[in-house]
Length: 218
Image (cartoon, rainbow, N blue to C red):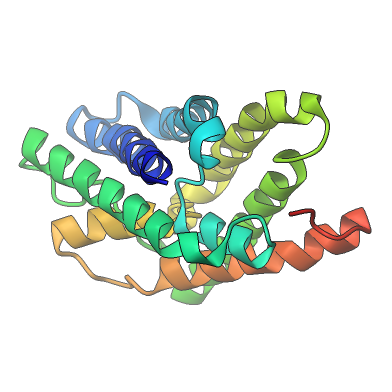
């Protein structure tokens, strides 16, 4: 169990460090990386971490995903606290490291609505539901699905970040949003991302069951 929790900590650390780090570097380098580069970074790091830690902890790297897996019967409820605590600690450490490396940056790659709060709220629900639906679909079954799961999930994260990032930040992950917010001390709309992403992950479960006409296997 300690190995699984450490894998979640380390995987989430790398995810937040690379993803939000790309945003920070883009800000201080006059946009050299660009929006497409940031979206690609998030997609690639998610795929890489699934390949790296998928066989250890499942590579959730995301409290909303872990909650979804518990409700879907894929993760014992007794493990949920350990998973979320490990993910949150990883995100906080990653944001803290970025703060040390780039002390002049203020946002640390945090997510903020660019328009209306309700717009971003419902967008995050939809984005997370799509991501979770993909995860539920490719994280079991034929061996071919297991091999390509990292590619499919990383691609979904990248494409959603590509088109929705300018509006809501395309978080899809409470830890990814809370880490930079807590370390930077900017709590503006901090409730939005944990609530919306968890709701999205929960919504994906009946969508999966209905679309696949099957019970989610444990």
